Image (cartoon, rainbow, N blue to C red; front, side):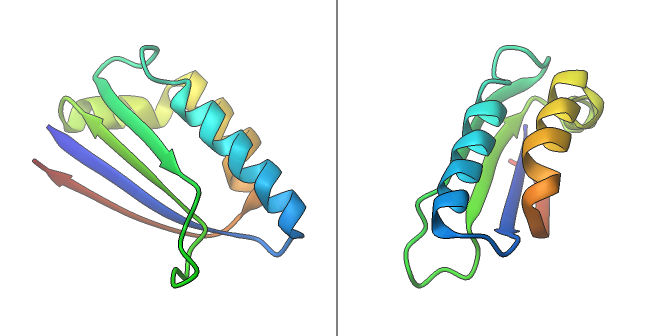
Length: 99
């Protein structure tokens, strides 16, 4: 099994825009469960505590590294990332590891 964790900091925007953007990211990425082979779990956490220095996190689990690579290029993931994530993110940090 492989964990794929991403932490995002959004671009400068109003609080109202951030709420809308976070909702769009969460809904569209979590909707990928059951659509991508080897993707077991996917959760986007959007309610960070004030002590945080990032805006949201993706926590996902894959069957193996090959499944993670397939996810990266899967058309449904590419659409969600290109439409809801990349246009709104200033900083992206990622860590992948075996569990």
